[in-house]
Image 1: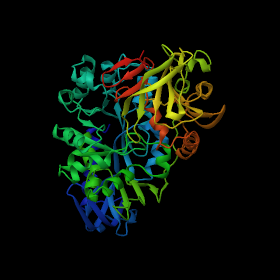
Image 2 (image 1 turned 135 degrees about the vertical axis):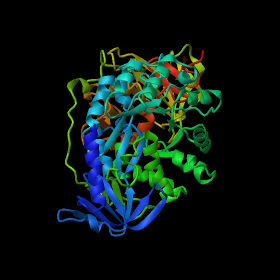
Image 3 (image 1 turned 90 degrees about the vertical axis):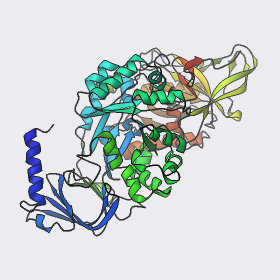
Image 4 (image 1 turned 30 degrees about the vertical axis):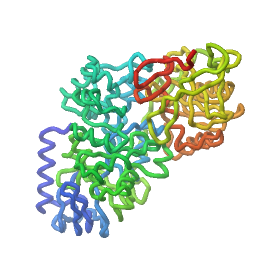
Length: 596
């Protein structure tokens, strides 16, 4: 934290440079200034930088030039504020904070707002502290939101740790914590749950932002109650009506484009067709796979998507810069190219085809033409963070048996996958039981899905059914299993399912594909069973073998490994699986897989 004297010295120097009494460290010349605060594009603009902050923005910065001043000629290209991701989870990229930053900075992302509730569900408050400490040393800005719902649904799952109001209040005193992470327990908020309201009260008392997560389509009294409780934004909307409802109630609508969640196109119509004020719409990614980050981009990809949907380029950039900075109260530092702000800029030849030629953070070029210029940082995780998969014994095929109350035709409650969306369908399908059990039925696209407890060494297994992955003769396992992050194993062969589970325990977590008794795809994620400390390219290549394994097993879904990882997310409708059993996520109750 800066002292009053340091702030005064900084502003005195900025004034001196702006007026020509002192010389700038850097001058960016001849740019087309994307002035998000006024909605203009101003050609022939110079930017003078001193001490990592902007001192002058105007038509001619020659009065700030000195013998030691570095000059960067923009050549008439656009000067865009550094892009900000309003809501995301580093763990979804299977990367550490350090490696995630290295993956996204070259695309023009200069700030991210992260909610580490994945690692919190495995390692608790000390896991969050690890992320905060790692975030503090990054070349771009990483703000952390304290996870709010660990577990996400009390009584319906058993995470590796439990956090509550005391932990939230403690975290609010940490430097680097910007607010409370997504409040997923929307029924609890609407019902007046004491713990949820105490967490939000601690956040509000600290003057920080309360993140939202309202994931059901019902916009009735439960929704109104949720908003009245305090959440200030939401990224779970999927339609223009969802976006409009949130904005009208005073929330910020976060429109996400991740690897699997493609919600920008539908929701942004509230702006392009209904004419709602775009100041209250933010862009985010939520969950991005390493392969997406390596090959497709990050926030630049989201900006391009919004523009392709008819959003004016300057407006789309506002949604990824100024709007986000305003929401989180950090406009004194980021979100615009203006005096006093940190010199975070992206130089690009085109707004529509947004591609970062140069990326500056605090007045330093950190990336150029898609390659990083900054040094390679490293953050070492302690031993307790890399030994988190605990099974009491090796599993066998019998552990994945789905017992039936009787033989013959039965009605089964089956999880139905919706491609590119987080919600699932609650299907009621006819299945046939033989010899006291129900087997997978590849011909009907019905696979088994099992949750294996991995936090306390109980080796408990809950078995259900899922439709939509198109699997034949294989098994796929993952310890990335939002939000409790036990182990999920899906498959059509019980022996392969047991082998997949045992392999995950052997490598300390990750994702694995087993087909006909052989491992055909694997990415190891030893940090909390969620992340690798390898670079994004290496992780993407290993994760690609998992995606290839899905394909070899007959799956044609887009990013199915991310889809699989949400099968235990009991706070998103309609049907999920947890260590307690099959969960009706609309009624918030455990139900039987098979009806008698």
